[in-house]
Length: 335
Ligand SMILES: [Zn+2]
Image (cartoon, rainbow, N blue to C red; front, side):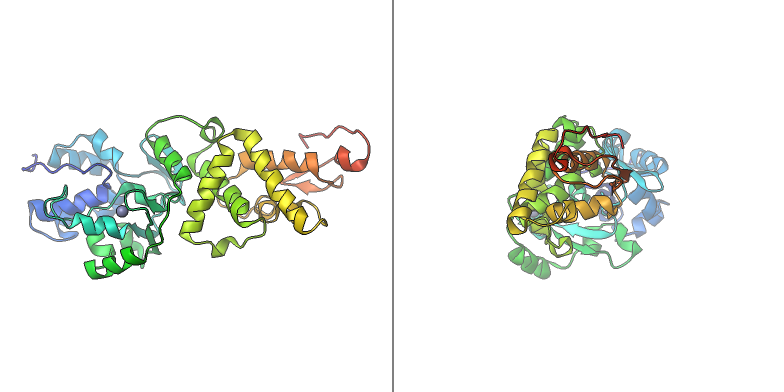
């Protein structure tokens, strides 16, 4: 049985938001009551289970393929999928409430596409998406107050309009979209750059963000203190370096280590590459950094003195680097 009149998702709207708008549209019920009436669990909507998609299709007439476009499916305990792109659990931020206050205020227009109802955008959920292109401001992002806020109904998780006005007025302006645009293109199936496309999208994004953070803010910057706007800037700078593949990455690493040596000529790779080295050497990441790690390892072996036997990014080095050993000795790069 299809419920009439038909209410389709708005372009870019999340499945959770769409389901939240179905409530008052069809039954005059608020929040989760409509889902209860229809015997949906909120978690099945958050996880976009096959059963949930099938039932939404039956009730609304919207095709299953179209419903899938606006959600994130759980495919394993810690693996998720949006469109045809698979990623780990920290890439789609289920632990956070995220919105553009200016977009939500515009949604209140009764003549708008949502007839005055707030719309949660699926794009806001992805970690590298930190700015609203439409309004040129940094998105509002905060930790959820509890598990229940995984259900990102903007009527429940975002504040009232008066607070939204303040948040919109105080939001830092932002115009760095490089990495964000790459992620959006990848979801749309647009290929390139090649080096990034060979990696999982969360691996590629993490590499851009970490590299960019050190390019823009220095090899020894405290990452915990970077703001969302600064992370957006970092992501774009890292993307610009990584779009040229290994050559671009090596140029970026040269720039970072040159700046470190300008400040102090002492020390090995840790002094030169700072937190890049710590990140890769001491595994300070939940995302496997292997592709960028291999490039950094090659760079270190080519340009810095490494004692034979030193373990560099999980692998022992058998030989000293030739430029520092004073003789021409081949490096075994497999070791
Ligand atoms: Zn906006």
